[in-house]
Image 1 (cartoon, helix red, strand yellow):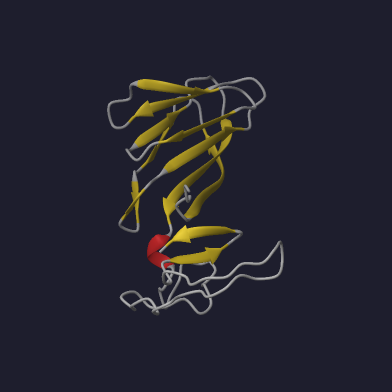
Image 2 (cartoon, one colour):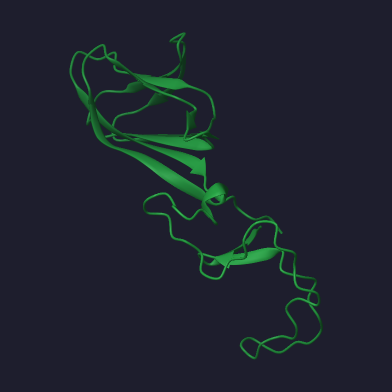
Length: 156
């Protein structure tokens, strides 16, 4: 089984990059390393260049009315080489595993109800038996090492 890492989104909102301007994005936020990012180009005819930062070497292009999504943790910059302003949106994805038990969670990140604090040992015997929905089952579980959140099972 493969479990996706819980993530939080750091959205830029709509930003305007004027002709010749470069906007830099750091690979870290709040002491966490970025997992991935998505850049959406809202312009009807001009492209945006994704570049290394601070070197400014092109390594990606966001075509007009298109998007560019990639797993990348390093610093990058978006440059507008056209003659006019271009609007775009950037979504940066960061791990959210550090916020599950935070008494002051990041704004917009739901707190899991009844989650055990870190370091709490698993209960012996764990989840016993099976439910009646979708069939029946019996037996003993192996402990509380997984949590159910947002429609998926995540390793704790």
